[in-house]
Every structure is written in structure tokens, then in C-alpha cells.
Length: 318
Ligand SMILES: NC(=O)c1ccc[n+]([C@@H]2O[C@H](COP(=O)([O-])OP(=O)(O)OC[C@H]3O[C@@H](n4cnc5c(N)ncnc54)[C@H](OP(=O)(O)O)[C@@H]3O)[C@@H](O)[C@H]2O)c1
Image 1 (cartoon, rainbow, N blue to C red):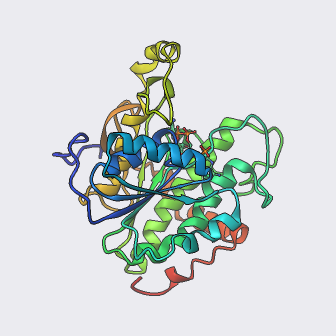
Image 2: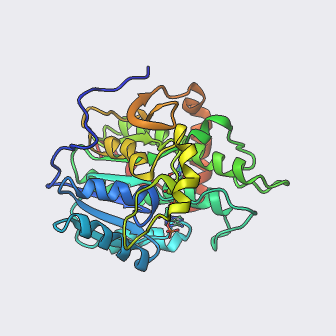
């Protein structure tokens, strides 16, 4: 079931001036371009990121192209439980969010390291941080009819399995890419389980997965003052354009997943060509990702590790 609900033009997005989106990691890379493209629709965009300075540069870059853009920064460090717990307070009087794009993430780390909460850094940031964050943001999604969560997955998740006896990669040897891939798979399994639980609670909120394909800074256009691509960097990356793309184009699946009303919860969207580059299309969700026992066990362990109770999900009609 791979296809493309047609008539979606990545260069001509519908007006969203009445809507509000929160993009984690909107200060850099793919998240910057997701923020820029959403802001271009007239939407209000909240860049949730840990560095105020980087967020300021991203906002300046967006304003230099879109002077009317409505973009603000919300401090968030996904690896620090206190920062995640305080997000709702920092969002102040916001009455609702139409979509949260869970883009932020750490890539493979050279060595095993832990967060200040004692979790393995990659799993702790990419999965546990997002698990706890979504519990906190749920009321703002409940308040916006037709809202959705977009989780940024990865092709890497297809080539691994979760080890439910060692989610935090504590056993030797530490393998950076395996730990990263498992963290993306955990995010994906969580996103699918969240969609099932939302439906079971009669919620209007939907949870969707997007992945960017392969995205390289060297193929990505400059966005001063945030980032300027060097000529040597560009030339070095050019041969890889046969299987990867710019971070600008890599933003397309997540942007479509956030905006296209025809996309339903539980769907997976990614680039058309070899899952590496091109316009966004729907992909078949691998059967292993839909294992409900694995999802239930991951949910339970994530609750224990984060303390996120998800009480609202137990109430009917959220
Ligand atoms: N690039 C690819 O080919 C590729 C492929 C598959 C999936 N992905 C996924 O796409 C997403 C974006 O990737 P990218 O290539 O754009 O990476 P990137 O350029 O390294 O950007 C990562 C973003 O995540 C933020 N981040 C990292 N740790 C954080 C934390 N603890 N709290 C809050 N924000 C944090 C970073 O903020 P700082 O600037 O503060 O570090 C940055 O904004 C990730 O989820 C990644 O797994 C990427």
C-alpha cells in the first residue's frame, strides 16, 4: 500500500493562518525547514529547542525570507525531565496546538553516555523525552479539533528490533548505530500505540509517522544567519544526491503529515524514491511495528522510567 493521495504540492501549501504548530528542534536541520515551511502557510510556529541563541538565529532566518512570519521560541531540552515537565507552563496562555512535530533528536553517539536523569542519552532523548513530552502536551491537542502528533521516524528503524530486556543499551558492547536505530523504532512503536490508544479513548487526535529519507547538510541550501553552506561541503555531498536529499526537501513528509487533512492516524509517510528522496508518499507500515505486546511492554517501561502517567488517555472522549 504505497501511494500518494494526489494533488499535494509541496511548493504550494494551503493557508493555515488560523493554526498553531509546535516543532521540536526547529532551530536546526530538518526541523528548521519544517518550521519555515509551516510558517510560510501563515501559521503560528513555536520552535521548541534547548538553545535560545540557536532559536533566535532560526527565527531571524525565517523572518529574512518571510517578514510576516509568526515564529516564537519555547525552551525545551528533551533529555532533561524537568525541562519536559515544565513545557505546559512555558506555553502560558496558549489555548491549543493543531500539530506537534516531534522532530528533535540526537543521532548516533560515539560512546555510551547518560542523561542527568540517568537514562542512556539516545534512547532517553529520542524516545523517553518524546513519551513524556506528549503526555504534557496532550491537553493542548485535546483543545484543538482535528489535531495531530507527527513523529519523525527513520529508515534505520526498519533494520533493527527492540530489546525489551535492555531498552537502555546497557549491555556491552555499545553499538552507536544500533542504539540510534532502536531509539527511532521505539519512537515509531510509541507513535502507533498512541494512535490506537487515542482511538480507544474516542479522541479526535491522530498520531502519524513521517520520515525524511536521507538528508545531508551538504545538499541543503544556506539560511543565513542560521547556517551557510560552504562550496567544498556542497561539492563533497553532490555525489550522494543519487540517494539522499537536502534537509529542505526532507522536511516535506513531516509538513504534509502535519497539514494534509486526508492523512489519517497510524499512517507512515516518507520520500518517494527508494525511501531516500523525493516527494512524500504513503508507505506500508511494517507488520513488526504493529506488535501490540511489544508496544504495551514499551509503554509500561516508558511510564516507569519517566513517571508519565498518561491519565487523560484513560478518560473517555478526550
Ligand atoms: N538527517 C537524516 O538523514 C535523518 C534520517 C532519518 C531520520 N532523521 C531524524 O530527523 C530528525 C532531525 O534530524 P536532522 O538531520 O535535522 O538532525 P540535526 O541537524 O542534528 O538536528 C537535530 C535537532 O534536534 C535537536 N535536539 C537534539 N537533542 C535535543 C534535546 N535534548 N532537546 C531538544 N532538542 C534537541 C537539535 O538541537 P541542538 O541544535 O540544540 O542540538 C536540533 O535542533 C531527527 O529526529 C533524526 O533522527 C534524520
